[in-house]
Length: 125
Image (cartoon, rainbow, N blue to C red):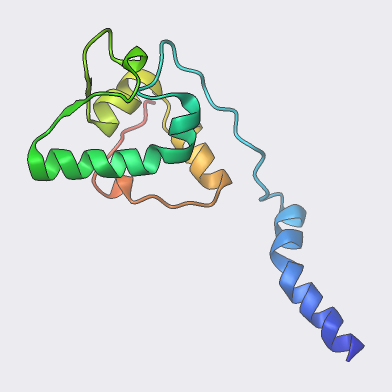
């Protein structure tokens, strides 16, 4: 019985030990702080960016609605609405290094978004 419990604990904790031994345990990423401001507050984006991007995709593709008006007017783009675009708004204007920003965070939380199935980002040399 004791041997069974030990075997269970070893198997249950094996991923933790493996990542520690091999060095695959990711350190929390350091995120770049872009100049200016985002389309919403940092707290909102941290919690809801995937829902926002999913909504943008649906509204642009299905309704040709490209203008995003933030919930708080202080986040307008110099008084104008933002363009609902992952590549032109998020990656072009703010988070210009996809590997250091998007990929580092997604790797840290072990999430595999399907954004890149359609959005092909060519990293600089």
